[in-house]
Amino acid sequence: FADGSAFYGDISIYLTNSIIWGNTSTGNGSDVFMRSNDPMDSRVIVNATFSDIGNVENYNNNGTYNDDGTNINTDPLFVAPGYWNDNGTPLDTSDDIWAGGDYHLQSGSPCIDKGTDAGAPLDDFEGDQRPVDGDGDGFATTDIGADEYILDSDGDGIPDAFDADDDGDALTDYEEGVFGTDPLNPDSDGDGVDDLNDAFPLDPSETADSDALETRITT
Image (cartoon, rainbow, N blue to C red; front, top):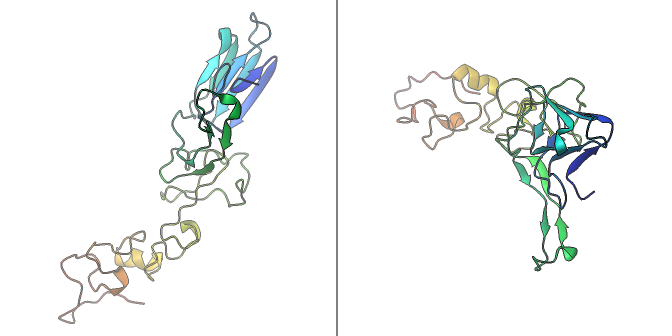
C-alpha cells in the first residue's frame, strides 16, 4: 500500500511491546492509518498496550484506537534508522534507494525496560536473553520493541546482569558494595586512580596509604 501502517476493513488489531515510529507514506497516514469500508460503522479497532506509537490517523473517524495508558509517544532512539536515499535526484522518487538502518536501541531509549513480560518471548530478534535490566535500576523488564537493550558498562561483552565486575576495575560488584565504591565506575572518586589501586577510593585528595593506617579490604 502507499499508506503507512494501514488497517482496513472489519478487523481488530492488538499491538503489544511494539514500536511503530518514523514511517513515511506517499498516500494516507504514516505510522498508524485506520480506515473502515463502511463509514457508518467503526469496524477497524486497534488496541495498543506497552508500545511506542507515533502518529495515528483515523480516516473519517470511523475507526477506534484504544490506548490503555501504558503506551508512549516518544522517539525510540534507534541507533541508525533506515532512510530513502534520493540517489542525487531529489525530485525523482523512481530511483530512490532504501538505506537499511540499525534498529537496536541506544542507551537512554524510552523503550528500555518499559514493555511487559506477559506473553513476551524469552529472547529478542537476534537471540539475546530477555528480560534483562537495561536501565540499571536493579529490575529486569522486557523492552518495548524487537531488541532487548544490553547494558554493558565496561564493554567486555558480558551484560551487567551477568557480569561480576561491571566496570572492569578487577573489583567484583560485591566487593565494591562492601567498600562503598561505585560498581559502574572504575574510578569512584574521579582522582585518576582506579578503585583497585586507590588506597582511598572515596577520597579524591588522597590515593596512597602514607601512614599505614588504611584498612580497606583488598583482593
